[in-house]
Length: 99
Image (cartoon, rainbow, N blue to C red):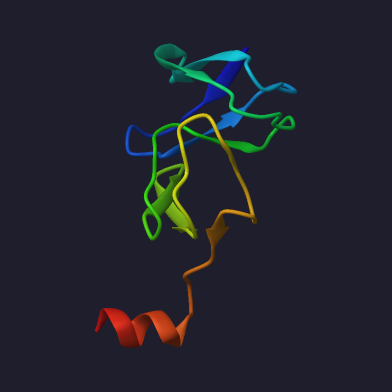
């Protein structure tokens, strides 16, 4: 089973087939293996899997770009989706806190 990362800094990978909890996935980047993950739960084809643990508030990076931030701690191998990430673009509430 395979999961794809495009950039070394990606914190998520895309699963390339239907994945069940307990499945082992080889993480590949540019056609070469770069690691291994064990799925902690079922993950549908094309969805994101955490390639590394993320603390609450950490940036979620896919294809070298921040796509959101972790709304709670996420363990490596977990499904990463709307239940554990939140958008951060155009949010005035975050700009006020960060500035």
